[in-house]
Amino acid sequence: MKEGDDGSIYKKSIQREIIEAVERMLPNARGLIPCALLFEMLRSAIALDASNECRNGFEIRIGKQLDQATVKDLLIPSQGYAKEERYDTECVRRLMKNFYRNYTGKDGHELITVAELIENFLIEIASDIDLKMSTFISLADFSLAASRGILQNSDGMYRAIDIYLDKHRYLTESEREEVCHLLDCSKMSPEACLHASRNERLPVRVMVQVLFAVQLQMRETMPKEIKGSEEGRLFLKGAEEEEAATRGCNSEEEVIKAEMEKMSSKVLELERECDMMRREILNGSCRKARKGKVNMWKEMKRKLGCITSMHDCNCHVKKKKVHPK
Image (spheres, rainbow, N blue to C red):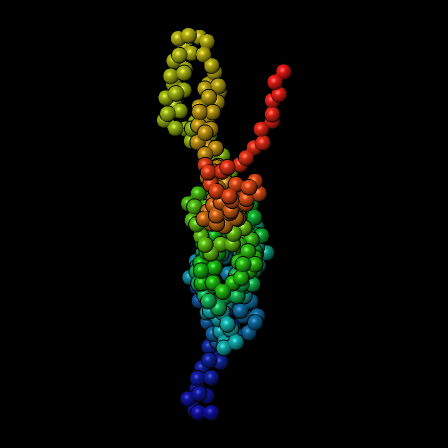
């Protein structure tokens, strides 16, 4: 071993002792030390191969105030040649456990912040080609289980899944379905549903679920749009004036009902379009469907003895003789 190497090892040993001593002197209360500074000391402890007690101490302090962290803070590089993934996801998992274990909030604001933080973290690491599917699912499941009923929107999770499927195109259909089970289609925005309905990377079953979610959204939003539209307000205003003049018009509820019935045809038309899209996905392309219908018609004509087209069909029907009285 060279003399320079001995000096480097000695210097690293001194630095390790310093970071371990600093960790022992730090207070444990939440918020006394900036979260970004704690992350910097944790990175130093990992790089210097500090003791497990030292690293655990930093992770516990960070976990108590994880809602103050940023995605950049969570991007901790993996150490050692044995690490296959780019970032230390196990460390992030431990930080999440520490946060939920020590959480004492009442309004749920910190839970929402951490759930969104983990979603953005997944979006950032989803492009890592070496990221294992089990790791991605485990982090997402942990976040969803802890924030169930808190987050009202699944767009962030959909974006992370979309990036992961795009960068890992070798996944089988069943594996893609396993990844997509994290997605709650009923909580996706109309824009995300529109993108998902055209996303060829999603499994067919998930695309059908998205179409059902679109149908439900239309049923919920159409009455609200009718009631809040300018046309609806003018209609109600005219009805009220007519009621004051004649003293025999329908009530406001009846007017709204009439307007909703007037727009019902539009809702039915949109639902029929969704049904057509769903059938196309399940049964294949429209060209194959039309070809199947033509073949079925030809088979029917063959069985009836009509070999030519429908206009040239010379099906002979034996007439019943009528005897004169």
